[in-house]
Image 1 (cartoon, rainbow, N blue to C red):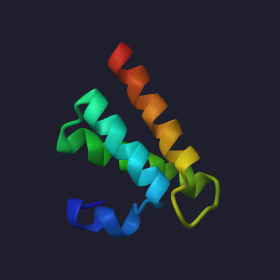
Image 2 (tube, helix red, strand yellow):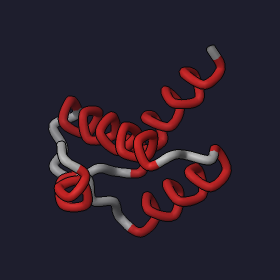
Image 3 (cartoon, one colour):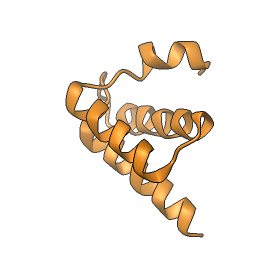
Image 4 (cartoon, rainbow, N blue to C red):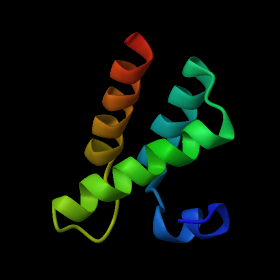
Length: 71
């Protein structure tokens, strides 16, 4: 997914957007990291056969990011 396509393909609801911004600020995401988290959330939503990324998909993607930072 190209960065320009990300906002269309990986759109978040207002609650998810708020969570994403808070996590990005707290964990000091680079643009590349932010894109990766959104792509993982999109994959999780796809595996759940859901068209839109829900807050729980984003939360799961953020948990994977936390696990990667801990290693």
